[in-house]
Picture 1 (spheres, rainbow, N blue to C red):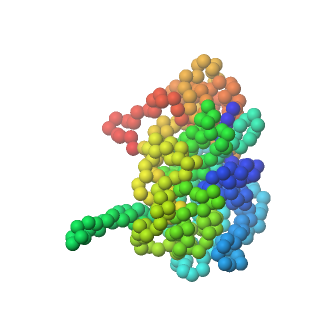
Picture 2 (cartoon, one colour):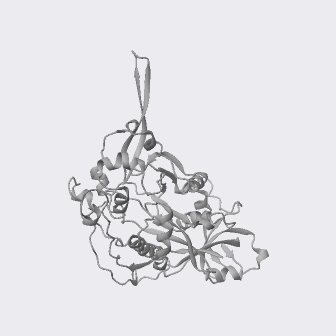
Picture 3 (cartoon, rainbow, N blue to C red):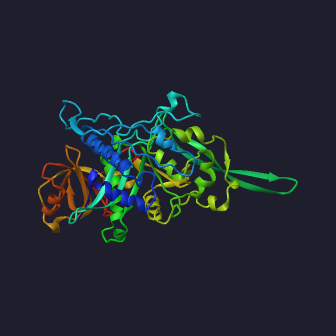
Length: 434
């Protein structure tokens, strides 16, 4: 059987191997960064359960110098060293867990000091830490071997007031000569600062040998994120984005960065990508605010803008199928497309319900199939795609399924039907569903 659970530190080595298969900015192939993200994820799941974890970050990694002609990289100088401390678990308050709203945590990762000139004013630069958000890392596990087969993520808020999320907005400029009687259309890129704090989906990767599995495991890794968002809407934004990776060369290089980004930020693609895990201030400080005519770039660099690599194409198709759209925003590093959707308009989110678990049923009585999950009081999350029945706010599972999820009658479970049957309660008369 295959289960979805939260990431744990024991998964770090496997996650590093998975990250090396494909280049994702939010799944770097770095043991220390991934370990910190796992700690941050543990605190986020605990927050969703209504408790607070006082995890301290692991020592931040060092970035090896690239071919920039300096003895130590920029990221190496800017990221502070914080000693490791043992994690402790403590209640958020003396109030009972049930029905209590979680309080916001101190970020797990450190906020680096401002970079060398040109720098922003302290009041503006202070909020540009990439770590100031709740990060949820999901793991796909084979229960027989207990092996980590894949992962996916949700970032609760990408940026916010004073901490913008950066992208390039593409637009057309048309020129026409009356005397020559012909013209030209140019695509220009303008740095766009989004302070609305959308929730981001990312970090989805599955081991290659399981990508054509009959259980459609990649689909489960992707859809469990919408299931979780629906169950904890207060933790997430009303807008979802997915920042997809543009094509990357086998040696980890990106043509748009080499021909554009590196002209303004003298770091290798790997160095810049790595430091983005701690701060985006250097992008805001060094990238130009003026329109950039992409016509000036060579064709091979322009060809990656708005495109994805073959390993990301299935994820793009899946997201577009459920309602995500490309609106001419691309990543300022590699030119990958940014897709977006309104959270309330995603059918998976609308269809998800919280239900009380009833007494077990025989297998032939389970008439539905979908994602069923349980979030324990200590923040442990477990989910699976399985058969169930639901009626009048009660969900019933087989004894085998209850054992796999480690749940008992009376517990509250989340359920997202995937069988195409309409189980969503109609909104009250006179009101339209958002």
